[in-house]
Length: 221
Image 1 (tube, rainbow, N blue to C red):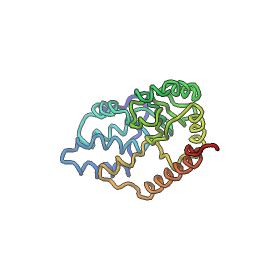
Image 2: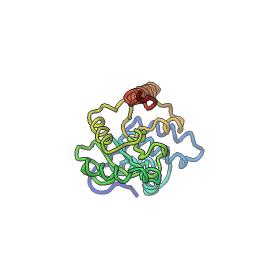
Image 3: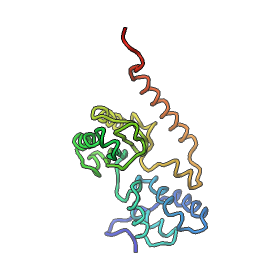
Image 4: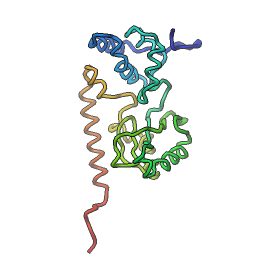
């Protein structure tokens, strides 16, 4: 049974992605073992798993499309509905909760004009509440497209959103769905130039932020 419904034509995987998907499936003794890596690969194309893409994955691994849908809806990093260009994740686990995460999330909802799970009218930003993002020493932790952007306050969050909308962080933060580490894990070579450029941009941005901070070691006479 297909995951698509209605008269609209499903958006299937491109021929290039299908070719890479077949290479991926061939790495496994059982095609079904490639299901989750295929979902990541497909999501890199559109930022979410379209019904047509899930149908393609099901055919590649020999399962029903409903099994692909069930798998995709189980994992937070896979999306079965469209998301914005930037997926902004605010951690509300205990360390962040104790250091202003709820207030930050409420501010984000108010400033963006959307609730958790919503996407701004311009399609730029989707806001989500996340479980522990493993950056507990810098609460409240925020990620954009699965890239850490450090602890945020309401003011710094607003500046971050302004920079995202202006494209000022695009060298540091890849389009949503692009997970280089997943591509490497499944045995498909990531674009090395893209990885190098991304790392260089991240290092440059971190250095600039560090230089902008006041010297905590200095003291008055």
